[in-house]
Image (cartoon, rainbow, N blue to C red; front, side):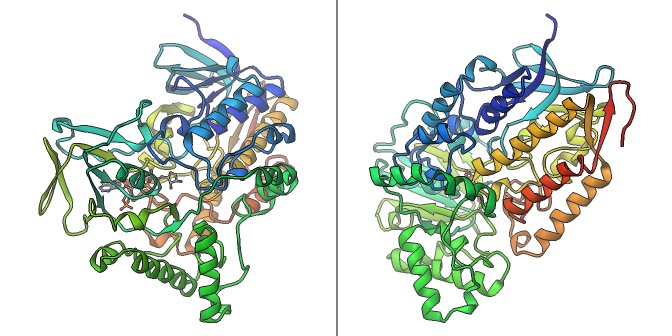
Length: 540
Ligand code: NA7
C-alpha cells in the first residue's frame, strides 16, 4: 500500500492535537491526526483513576481562541474532574467538526525525514505509511507512564493498576487491602476516594510532598455566568501572566511582611485554595527565606490536621516548596486519621520486590489485594523518546538527546537536524509550569504562523540552527540556576526515574516572557532558523 499524502501529520488528539488540527485546517492544509486511543482527550482519555482532576481553575482550563466556543461551555466545578474534561474535549471535537481528520486506534511507531523530497515519512502500528511536509508532536509532556521496573510484578496474584492507564470500568475496592505507590498529584487525588471503599489502604511513600487544600466546590450559575462574562479577562491572563492563569498574589516577598501578616496571607490562601501557595509571594521559587516561611506553614498545617504526631512527622516534606509541582488535594492529610489508612516511608525501608501476596520492603512485607502505581510519567521527553524519530542523516532523537540526558531544542519547539518538525509542550518550553491550555494555545499559534511563513515564501524547510539551540539551552539553564528549582530531584529534572538524571529542561521565565521571545524570533524573520527553497538552495 502506498503512503498517504498530507501537508501535515499531527501526533495525538489531546488539547494540543485538536487545536493544531483546527489551525492548520483553517490555513487550508490537509492534516491527519494520528491517535493511539479510540477517542479524543490525550492524557484525559487515559487518566481515569478515582478522584482524577485538573489542578488549574476550570474556567481557565479551556480554549480561549474562539469567544464563541468559550461561551458555549459551562464548567460544573471549580476544579474539573477527568470525566468532565473528557466531555469538554469531545464537545470541542464536535463543535469544530474535527473527527473526520483524526485516525484513532493508531500509534505512530516511526517517523523519519526523507532528504530526497524533504518530507516526513510516518509509520504506524497498523502498518500504514503517511508522508507529510510537516510533522507535529502533540503527544504531551506527561503522557508516557512510568512503571518502575520492580521485580515480581508478574507474579502478583491480585489486581494492579497505573493511575495513568486506568480501566474504563469502575474498579471496586470494597473490602480490599490496597497499596498505593506514589503520592504525587495522582496518588493524592486517588487515595481519599479509594479510602472510602478499601478495608486497608497503605501509602508507600518515597518522598513526602507538600499538599495544599484544594477547596474544590461546585460552580453556581452566578459563577458560571461570571466566567462567561469575563471572557476577555480570562483570555488576557493567557497572554499576560507567567502561568497563563490569574492567581492570588500579594506581589511582594514574604520578608516584606510581619510574621502576623505572613500568617494571615497564608491562612487566606489555605482557606480559599492552596495552589496559591506558589503565587502568594512571587519570590517563593527564588528566595530561601520566603520558601522556608511557606514550607513551614504547610508543615505546621500537617501537625494541626494529622492526629498522630509520628504520622505527621513522617508526612513532613523537607525540600524547597514549589520546586516539585505543588499538589492540591481534598482530605489528604485528614485521611491519615482513619484507622484503616497508613503510611510507610520508603526512606530507610525501600521496595525490594513485588511478591505473590503484596509488596516486599526491606524490613517487612505489606500484604494486599490491589496495587495502585501512582508513579507518574516519563515526563517531558518520554513520549518523544518512545518513537523512532529520525532527522537528517538518520540522526535519531535518542542520539541527539543522548537518551534524554542532554536535551537540546530551540525555543522548546524545534530542533536542528529535524526540519519542519515541531513540538507542542516540548522540553525547554515553559508549559509544565503553566496552565496547559494557555501554553498550548501559544505554542500552536506560533507553529501555525511559522508554517504560514514557510508556505507564503515558497520555502521547503525550516530548521533550527545549532547556535540558536545552544544559546536557548544556555538561557534556560541560566534562568533555572537563578532559582531554587534545580536543587530538588523531581520529574522536572528527570530524577523521578532511576538512571535518567538529566538537568533541568524547563524554561522558568514564565509564559508571558516566553511569548515575547517567540514573537520576536518571528518578527525578525525567524531568527535562528535556516531555510531551504524548492531548489535545495540554503537561504540563511
Ligand atoms: P508524579 O508527580 O511524578 O508522582 C509520582 C509519585 O510516585 C511520586 O510520589 C514518586 O516519588 C513516586 N515514585 C516514582 N517512582 C517510584 C519508585 N520507583 N518507588 C517509589 N515511589 C516512586 O506523578 P503524578 O501522576 O502524581 O502527577 C504527574 C503530574 O500530572 C502532576 O504533577 C500534574 O501536573 C498532573 P518521588 O517524589 O519521585 O520520590
